[in-house]
Image (cartoon, rainbow, N blue to C red; front, side, top):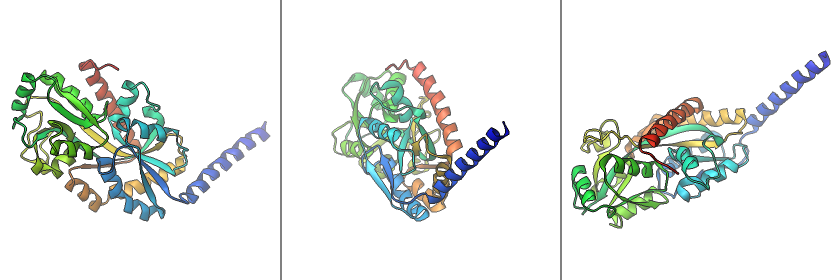
Length: 318
């Protein structure tokens, strides 16, 4: 009996040593960063901003690869199926990774297929219209939409994403019917609204900040007015309790060994806590976060509960 006990102890020690050795050897080569959207979008901006810091910390290249389809679902399906060795990580968006497995039949991933290593930032979602659109205020937009049901085209990234959900919520709260048009990334939405190909967009604060002079921003989904958009009212100010936002960061397959998980969490936390990195994020219209594994999953759980309430309140179905 004692022999078996000693064997169990020895095996446990050997297993622990193997994990530690693996972590000490990691990384040996390039790390692939899967991006669920097109170049130029918020996931890409954050990844590119982190890239030089991470490459310096890890001593290996961080190669960003793009898989823009199905509102991110293609990329996340690939990431869920990737070898959990730390050499394949990826960007994510919340609420997308919560909503898509619930509402999209062909999605090949579940929310709990991943370990979230860091929530880097979030962006409040606002409503903007093209420069020559007839409405100049949210009230005028709502009145026009009611007079022209289904004729106002509103762009957003993907289905069952933060933008899609914000559009559905807005229609429910205001009694309007909008024509939601999907794109593969924020940069495409930006091009479409600036070129007059769509009337409006539910999109991110970053786009509002960068294209402020070429669009009209009617309202933002932040609890309070943003410093970068101080003259733009919130939906709450205008009588609508809606606070849509998208949080983003870095995740990996759930079976990632603990030692490698801790290593990646550490280098990401070091990067996202740098004052110069956070200043760049704020200047671009992001709200910096920098949450580690435990806090990121608490955020994910809390958002999931809030989304379930909204899904029930607004009667959303698959």
